[in-house]
Amino acid sequence: MPSSTTLIDRFGRKVDYIRLSITDRCDFRCTYCMGEDMEFLPRDEILTLEECARLVCAFVDLGVGKVRITGGEPLVRKDALKLFQDIGRLPGLRELTLTTNGSQLEHYADDLRAAGVRRINISLDSLKPEVFRRITRVGDLSKVLAGIRAAQKAGFENIKLNAVLMHGINDHELFDLVDFAITQPLDISFIEEMPLGEVDHARRQTWCSNDETLKRLQQQYTMLASAESTGGPAKYWRIADTHTKVGFISPHSHNFCEDCNRVRITCKGELFLCLGQEDKVDLMPLLRGTTDDAPLRQAIVDSMQIKPKGHDFDIRRAQPSVVRFMSMTGG
Ligand code: SAM
Ligand code: SF4
Image (cartoon, rainbow, N blue to C red):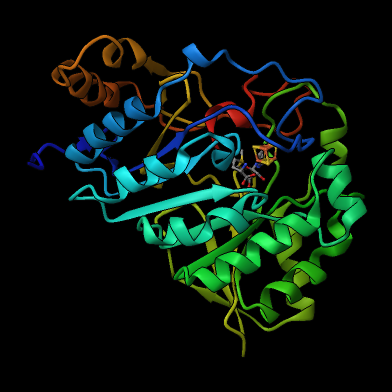
């Protein structure tokens, strides 16, 4: 039975959205997300799929209506589909979504749709195979494009591309990426690179502001500001006479913390209350070796007391604000 309890933090923000990373592994090694040689967690240190399902169920019971499954690359986890099927059946869940690099979508798109996933985000930073390879280090663009086609055929209600633009690497592809989105037609969001993970001085040279990206787009297209929201931090614009919406996720240019409605859970069961801060609660001990969900639910309710007011990213700093890879926290 859904309970009347809702998750409200000290600043009055209602938390009704969770992002759960189900693996730290990935078949790509995107430069902004992972190191070249990653050491992944041993199997017994990550939540089992049954533990993931119990966790999601507890959150949904506490009023969470939207769940995004992420990673790492969620679709490289064996039997990930079963989790989608289990979560997709939960009464009280409004929306089950997925963020994927698209490499496995050709195989899973139909089944994900049947499991109740209605919208998906697919990361795509380049349409040039060699640039795509440089950014992902090992990725094959043709597989991702095949994945996008499969998703279109499977009939998702919305497919959104996510792109991280980087000066001198893929920023010259801005119009190609947007034209691709227009012709498909799909939506596209630009995410400003966040200083997570390895110390990387090059990042300050490659960082592209979304204000600058929007200005470039306004010179090429008629951009219409939109009040639409998908329950996330993106600010949207419509391109006149197209079906494409362009989103901007701008942690540096615009602080989106005051509307934050989400928390993140790593594949180790760590509940992070903010992407850019270290405040967390370890939920694994409350899941493993026990079947009583009451302490788990209480820990989740109590965690609202330590949700920080906001993040602390500063691209000018040499050290990343939080030395944690996105593949751990989930994008
Ligand atoms: N593997 C999946 C994918 O690539 O979509 C899901 C996980 S990935 C961590 C989720 C999103 O985070 C991707 O769109 C990726 O581009 C983004 N991302 C990863 N590291 C980032 C960073 N340092 N700054 C901004 N976005 C980042
Ligand atoms: Fe993998 Fe996604 Fe990170 Fe790229 S951004 S390395 S695809 S988890």
